[in-house]
Image (cartoon, rainbow over all chains, first blue to last red; front, side, top):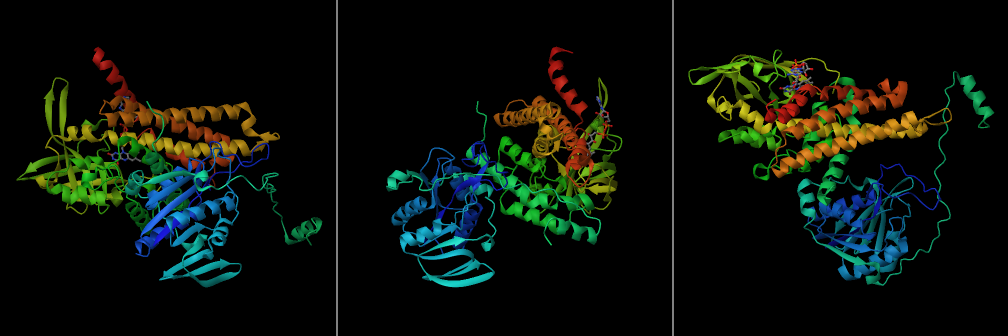
Length: 252
Length: 386
Ligand SMILES: Cc1cc2nc3c(=O)[nH]c(=O)nc-3n(C[C@H](O)[C@H](O)[C@H](O)COP(=O)(O)OP(=O)(O)OC[C@H]3O[C@@H](n4cnc5c(N)ncnc54)[C@H](O)[C@@H]3O)c2cc1C
């Protein structure tokens, strides 16, 4: 079985995000970018499937700006076998919307014929949480979202899903699209030998046009703003004072 | 000329940075509080490092290392420099002097050190001989076919975790036109060798938990097989290999300075007094400007020195400059950062006071600033007959 893992280049989770002064989005110029953390979990899971003898090949694919190549190299350094870069934008601020990404991925699936797609449940930049689901709809494949456990046996997969207030376990038919959640695994570090090998692994470069997909945005971003800053707290001297303050604030 | 990392080098930097942020940072406060590294934690850091193939990455591939260039290894150490030294010690980088091992010494010391099975430490300094290495009194004399060691070494880092120590001792004296000169030999001494004890050293304000130990040799008997390199060849061994520890001080100083700088920058942008961020006051803003300028200068100076080693160019003076400038830069940067944090900077609620304390030793160990200036000036003036 071949596993396809879509990975997205996003602002690094450690970076303090700054909104552009015109409110059109987040400032990404000269900012550290990394692989979307959920996608790292997907890559890790795919490599584990390969190590367990349940997959033969792990193919990472990224859709975005040319620099997404670095994200693919990271996937290769973690242990993916090869990579496909699909250039769909020139400006690092251009975000390709989930439907366009899903359409391109569908075309990649038609070409590559994987038995499983493992993707992150969402990207931490815009939190859309839609690509996996849209891809399942376009392909007509089964879907298992928010996976915190995955077990593949023959032509079916058992997926434990993290749903509100608990876990739900479902059994789905392969081929399938599985979107992964935080607790599925702890991604490994790229190993030094794999880092040195990553450059020698194949990385194909294509464009969105090669797949005939129009990536023009359907959504208009009206405004982006900083979350309200937390106001400083206050230390009270007694319970009475606390109750008085709460009343004052209209909380009691 | 090219001023930037390759894709692989960037990935090395990112991976080590992440390792330090994930495996080291969360445990720093505890090490600082207790002055100890719990054995399980040390083991966990070590085994993760081995798993990722970074352990002993400064060693060539033919002995099981990763064969990184000096430049790449400098990048690794720069990122490690961000973290507590007590903890990054277990992201093992054995002394590259072990490459001088020959014959069965390779099986007993070099290869197990590279595999992370045996840890090493290096002992030169004595209570009476610091900068003046040749002033050492720790000695070995011939007795039958063996050597008998007597004397004391102090300030020996990592010795409490070491399975064996690389020890430099005097093995004779030569008359030279400039007076008597000691001959020095390097020995490999296993922990537990009769007549050899390792005991606690002093409490240092810098790098709590990264202990320095005292080694006592009391008629410690060693066979010839424990000699590293040639008898009386200790200086040759030192000259061939010990440049590396000075580059380490330089790179780690740069890494730590960047970590401190990021905190100072954020503080300058966020802390408000007189109704505006303190960074808007020129007194603070210009401080930030000077800090980053010095950090970048130290970074390039250090990487350029490592690059010279890779090119096989003479690098002794450049390494001394890098060690001197980076360690002094770190002192200025941590001091300025503490000033930007004001009173809170001194409190152990924040790590700033720790970075400030830790910075102090960098100008002392592996050759004091004065000794580096001596190396640099002699390198330039001696050829001119001055
Ligand atoms: C925490 C710690 C860990 C250490 N770890 C190790 C270790 O693992 N292994 C090891 O072998 N050593 C280790 N050292 C020793 C370290 O390398 C020495 O402290 C250092 O070389 C200086 O020696 P000293 O402390 O005896 O100072 P001294 O040599 O006594 O120097 C005192 C002062 O005199 C100055 N001075 C000396 N000679 C000259 C000169 N010619 N010109 C101008 N000024 C001069 C010095 O710069 C310094 O300011 C460690 C030291 C410390 C503090």
